[in-house]
Length: 303
Image 1 (cartoon, rainbow, N blue to C red):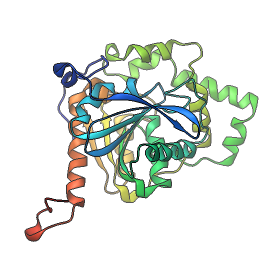
Image 2: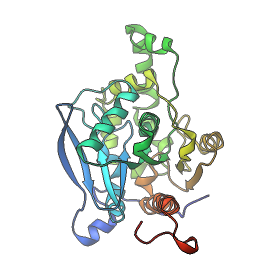
Image 3: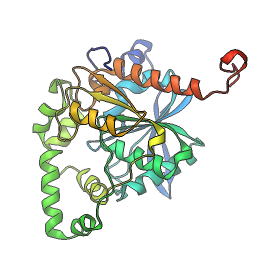
């Protein structure tokens, strides 16, 4: 399935918010396990947890779409420690990030949420769904494949100075390098300025936290959740091509795959309209199907 084409925005707010001259989503400072945490919240409706990738925080990944999403959902977009919020230490394993998300929802008094992850965020929401299935209403994977459980030897090697330096150099070359933009974006000119700064940095602050999580691996989400895969069709990053998306789709019975043409690794940035439409249709269809049925097969209006 393919979503319609179009051009995205690079600014801090999406078009709908700019037209209204206001912002619905705002940052909220809270404490999780006694440490400061930042989360962008706004809107009403089905709770929607947006988990960013390895390049930066919530604003870099979700600002182009969160105002539109907040018109239909309760948006919850945290800055992951060590990655989105680099003044905080990383948490290490993916499972630790999943537990952090659970405590975040507790702090916000949200019992469960639809979980959307982009790139590295896919591994985080996958681990969250595995550990806390009752708190995940459904999954959306955006240009990312969950990092599988890795042999203990990988973790052991990652803790040794020389192998870790080698792994760090490899991640620096493949993930934190200005040259990746030509493979990650259909039009590199659409890349946010904040992303360019990270990739051009000699020592990206996110790298160590992401490396720790990648070394320790994680668990694939339960197959019963039947995720939606939203994929920027022009993504050429290693392991994230359109062919890789098709392979992931085939490995997850019941999943849905929607390609967004002329977009790459962050389709929500390059084509916000198509992204919001794909996610909204998926959630609204699933939510409607889950409501109690009334007489005549119609969903009960008060559900």
